[in-house]
Structure formats: structure tokens, C-alpha cells
Length: 222
Image (cartoon, rainbow, N blue to C red; front, side, top):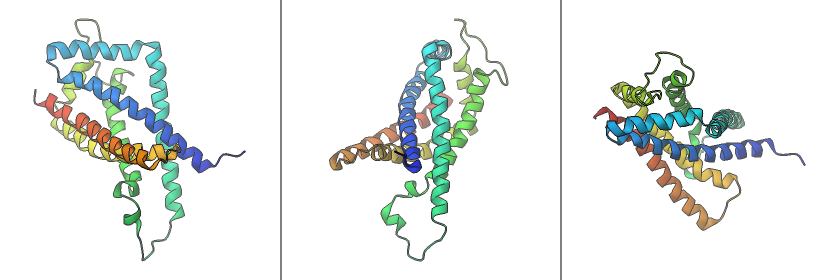
């Protein structure tokens, strides 16, 4: 039995999206270490980062994460292009605002903004620490790469802090719409259940956006 290509793409986007949602919880939890006093935070953060880089199990998860990001972006792009081609004409009567939210109508734009953030974020952290591109990070007293100092230095740049925080707004919009849509895509259509999912999605998106967005400012003001 042939699988509908559109259904396959949407299912893949939903599955990878849910996986990325779990990753964001872990990532935000780690970033909360930055809120602790420096004497405690530096050692904890650097030890955590070293574990991420050296643990065989975490490496497998990391590769799954990279693959999920690529698949999520590529297939979301394919669906966006397909949708635009399917609606080449603008009709005089357009009730799209009544049938869908602004976020759902502009997921392509929002996704592009998030992709921009990911590229800049990886260039400043992953490329420097993982690939050794750019200035070499220092080593702390425990012998770990001083990722805390890399992060702290970046968050002392007000322009980067504003850029980082501002792009948490489209992230929150994307998470709110994407999380509740993922359950529908995966076949969950219970009426009351969807209302609960919608509330959970909103709360989750708000926590992620506010959490990631406020930490850079707190570190900047330390």
C-alpha cells in the first residue's frame, strides 16, 4: 500500500518536532545553571558540557538531534513550497483569518527566523567548541573546556542578547502552533483532549520563550 507523500512529510515533521520539544526542555534546564552564582555555575556548566561531548549515549542522541533538525527544516520547506504553489491566485473573498491563526498562515516566515537563530547560535557555540573553529576556549581548573566563559562572554554583548531574546518570540509562536498541530497530525482528535493539548502547548511555549529569552538578560546584568 502506497504512503501518501504529504502525509509522510507531515508525520515526519510532527515526530521530529516533538523530539525537538523534549530537547528544548533539557536545554533550558541546563541554561538555568547560568543563573547560579558564578563560583557554582562555572564548574557545573562545564562539567555538564563535557558530559554532552564525551558520553557515547549522548553522542547518539546528538546525531539524532542534528538529523531531526535537518529533516524538520527540509520537509517543512517542501510543504511550504507545495502550499504556495497550490494557491497561486489571490481571491477577492478570503476568509483565511477566520479559518486559521496568523501563526499558522506564516509558519514559513517564522520558521525562517528560527533557522536564522539556529545558524547564528551554532556558529557561536557548536562550531567553536565542537569543531574548534575560531578562538580556542580556555580550560577551567577541573580540566574541562570553559563553555561557561564562552556563554558568559557572548551574553555580555548587548546586541547578541537582544538578537537572542527577540528571536524567542517567533520560537514561542512556532512551538505553540506546532505542538498542538503535531498531535492532530499523529491522529489525536479527541475534542476535549485537543483543548487540553492546546492549553499545554500555550504554557509550554510561554515557558520556553520566556525562559530562553530572559536568561541572557540576567547573565548580562550579573
